[in-house]
Image (cartoon, rainbow, N blue to C red; front, side, top):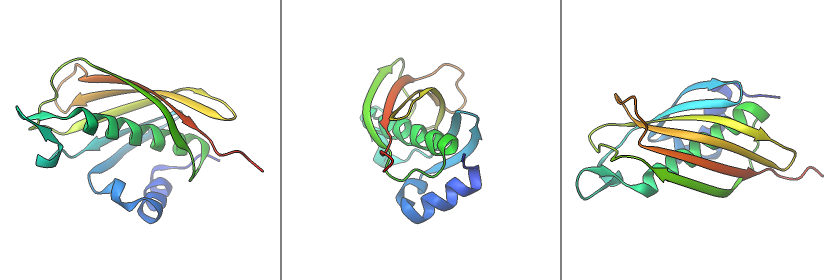
Length: 138
């Protein structure tokens, strides 16, 4: 039932193409995913810092990718909760790497954690816990 990297890319290109404009899926793992987000001027706040909303967008997307990688191509999974902790300034001259691991996969809810890094840094810029609701089977 799981989907591989190529199946996910093809699915997203058809169903959610705007998400692939700045995101590159690097890896799909058992209960996880990793991607690279290309930062540009639109993602910055004053001080050449990647904005908080941009980091939340990246975290939300990598969590969705991990879910469809684990469960298969679930179109209507939706975000129900996100909690983000910002640790340090994300450098606006560098892209963002997102690493997600699913913590709990239930019948109706999936919870995962995401670590966000400025590319080239070993220390994370933020940590996110997010939950998605899965569509009910009829």
